[in-house]
Amino acid sequence: MSRSRLLVLAAVTALTASACGGGTSGEEATAKPTELRLAIGGEPEDGFDPTLGWGRYGSPLFQSTLLTREPDLGVGLDLATAYEVSGDGLTWTVDLRTDAAFTDGEPVTPADVAYTFNTAARQGGLTDVTALDEAVAVDEDTVELRLDEPRSTFVDRLISLGIVPEHAHDDGYAREPVGSGPYRLVDWQQGQQLVVERNDDYYGDLPAFDRLVFAFTDEDATLAAARTGAVDVAALPSSLATGDIGGMRLETVTSIDNRGISFPTVPSGSRRSPAGRPVGNDVTADVAVRRAVNVAIDREALVEGVLEGFGSPATGPVDGAPWYEPDSAIEDADVDAAAALLEEAGWQDADGDGVREKDGTDAAFTLLYPAGDTLRQGLALSVVDMVAPAGVRIETEGVSWDEIDQRLHTDAVLFGWGSHDPTEMYNLYRSSMAGTESFNPGYYRDPVVDRHLDAAMAATDPDEAAEHWRAAQLDDDGHGFTAPADAAWAWLVNLEHTYYVDSCLDLGEPRIEPHGHGWPLTAGIASWRWDC
Image (cartoon, rainbow, N blue to C red):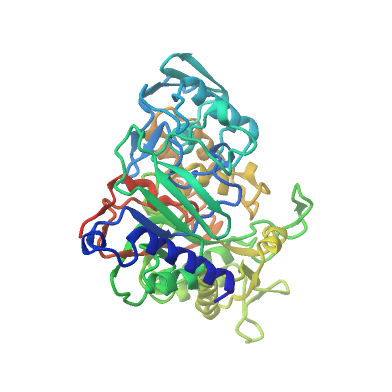
């Protein structure tokens, strides 16, 4: 273990001794702790400014949001007491509670809400507010969010965008945030730990714990901290969550955090990306190859062998969400069927070397994954073995994200996604998003899918939107981006997030978690209790 990680563990252990009294009286020693120590990752590089993206994958903790995501993925109220959408979908009117205050004592006003949304839209941060024309405070407890086009997913901005104070939102805000959430930041030692204290003036249900200490440790150090009792909650990948730890239980949380392979879907040399990077791959541009890979993969085996059973097979980016199309699922792996697809498309093993060829090109391609990610490495190597009997050769490379960014349009990449917001589906498959950051890396394009995605985004009725989201995956005419149709990706597994939790700590009702950025586990922190 590195010296820096040992110092982090030493600091956490010292805080533990300080909080518990370190050998004081029996009454003090048996008192229920008022401090929790958490090693759950998620340190944000850019700090804690929601207008730049903090909180988009989970509770922003320091800031309040207008709405909340309920455990069943429904929508609940937070700062908002009610909201309505105009018939044309262009105006969202939000009524606000009047008893909320920032931690500097100033009240939360409609002007602060309008400022937050306008600033997020202007800055173009990671929280997508591009549909907003303007936000306007119309009276002492009402704000209007006026869009330039209908956007069914705008409700997710009301859920994810933490409200900042106009009077205190300056260049230093990301490091010293002022908010109206259940906790306030006390000390941040970047790369080591973060200390927060309960906001006792919070308008909602107060958490039971006065103080939280977040330790930023790598996987090995996190496991060591759990084993030594230095932390109360430790997030670990399923590959490390296989043994018993005294005084702790293993808690699994359902997520829509997934792993999947993006394929370049156009021939090589056909264009270049806006950044000037090459685009295309002559092998994966053939839909038969993409379908064959999808059919040959034994996803159940991936769950059992790589995830240690902590997950489920995935055949799309939104498995289990209300907008998932179940008919797009692949029921069972079938190598013979995969071979037949390739044979029919003209891929044959004429020289008997086990790799099919077509027009002088081998059915072979490279699969990239981020170096150091043992989970993705395990998935990649397993996929290689699963598709080889069908006559497809995959070579894997663990490389840096910088290199992936250079090659993601020409090589297959093992990505991780998963959001409570279906906008992610639009970003991954809409043709107009090709070449934008990591979205639609394979330059997938289908006009029918584009129409379904556009209709889903523009719908003013949630049920109508869900119908189009499902049709984009697979519609009645067989169009779609999923495996039975265009097979633009090969989705592999959905993860269960695994945590070692102190045996006396009750985390309340579990919530379906998104992809593992931020601290989604803390979304339900008001219900956490020490019960022994």
